[in-house]
Each structure stands twice: as C-alpha cells, then as structure tokens.
Length: 196
Ligand code: GRF
Image (cartoon, rainbow, N blue to C red; front, side):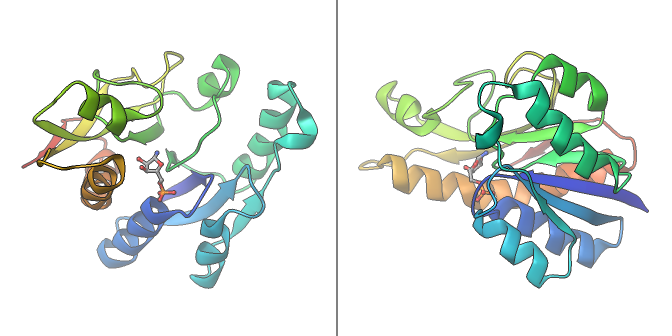
C-alpha cells in the first residue's frame, strides 16, 4: 500500500479529504502530516485521526531555506513515504528540496493552471471577469505552480461572487479532485483527472 506524507500550513481541509478517502479506499495510507507551523489546525485534526504528525517551525531558520528544508526532510524521510502531497502548504520550496521528491510530489492549487499561478487566484479570476474558475492538482517541479497537470475541476463564477464565495465553491471541488488524483497517481497512472 502506498505511503503518503501530507504537508500543510493551515486548517488542513484538503489533508482531511485525502485521509478520509484513503481510509475508505484502502489504496494508500497516510504515514505523516507535517507542517511548517506548529499551531496549524490541521496538525491537531490529523493527530485526532491517529495519523503521525510533525511540525518544523520555519521561523527560527530565517532566510536559511535549505536548513529549514533539511529539518523538514528529516521528519519526512523518517516515515519512508512513497508520495508527498502538498495540501495548503504555503512555503516556497527550493530546487534542492524538490529534486529529492520530484516525480512523486503533488500540489493542489486553487486556479485552472496555467492561469493564475501564485497567490490571490480568486481575486484575479474575478478581476479578469472569468466565467469559470477551479482548481488544479499538478506534479511539483522547480517552476512554481507549473508542473505536469494531473487533474482539474471547474466551477462557474456566479454574479455577485466575492473572493470568499468563489474560494468556498472551489474548495468543495478541491476535496473531490485531490483524492481522485491520488487514487489514480498511486497506481502509477498519470492520466489527468478532469472533473465536470
Ligand atoms: C486551499 O485553497 C488550497 O487550494 C490552497 O490552500 C487552501 C487551504 O487549504 N493550497 P487547506 O484547507 O489547508 O487544505
């Protein structure tokens, strides 16, 4: 059974969706939930599910990203994961870290990549007057939010939408998309999952 490490920075709703799906589908098991923020709400939620957790506060490392990443990698590699899932993980990763896991590290991004890499994706879609928005799961490569796309889910932009109402609509689809992609990726199949 594939061993999955999940990296979070916040509430971990995507982590929970993945953990629930793995429990249901028995195609993989979460072996670690790690965060760069010891106070991340997702850490307590993972612990409550009996999933091993780790937190490496990035702040004491200051600008020394490689030192932070070395400490994080130590925690990750101790659990011997097959696949890493970034789920609301909000730290930029160096090429060195990415090289360690390239080809088996996924991320979920709240836009229809290649549109809107980076932050504030919903505000940018609204400002552009887009009629649809969505989320993307992609392989993580050294180019931020630009790796091979493994899945996308689309939602309509509705009149009167705000960042928050659009984000909530997209988040619901993130929780459908990420597990569907992980199920497929865990079998070695990289065919994109395109949810209606
Ligand atoms: C989500 O919008 C996700 O797309 C982005 O981080 C946000 C929070 O994710 N990467 P979570 O609730 O912590 O999983």
